[in-house]
Amino acid sequence: MAVPTVVTIQPQYGMAVPTVSRNIWQTGLMDCCSDCGVFFCGLFCFPCLACQVAENMNECCLCGASVAMRTLYRTRYNIPGSICSDYCISMWCLVCSVCQMKRDINRRKEQGIFW
Image 1 (cartoon, rainbow, N blue to C red):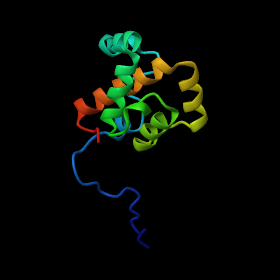
Image 2 (cartoon, rainbow, N blue to C red):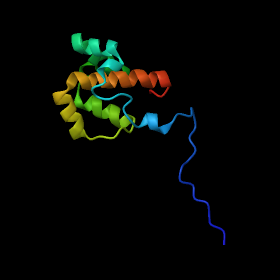
Image 3 (cartoon, rainbow, N blue to C red):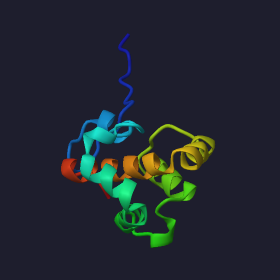
Image 4 (tube, rainbow, N blue to C red):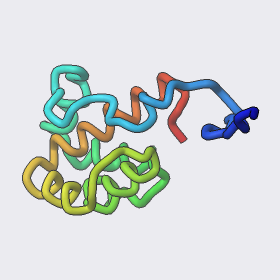
């Protein structure tokens, strides 16, 4: 008796990109030294960095450093986490949070997987 073939993964159209790079943060929350330009911009001109993140996400400049922006970004790329974790990170590590999002945007642009 032949076993029927079950398709568990549907073919995807477009550019072939490893799934691993899509569903995780490209850098850690405290990886400041992985992109010193982003870190110094966040440290010395935080509103500028927050506006850059919001602009990259096609959102209002005032939203760049919000919990909602982090949650939107995380859900857009299926990055594990929760609104509670987004809230805690944004409350206690706001500069690190926005720097992480900007580094992630830059890396995803380089890989061609930012939309």
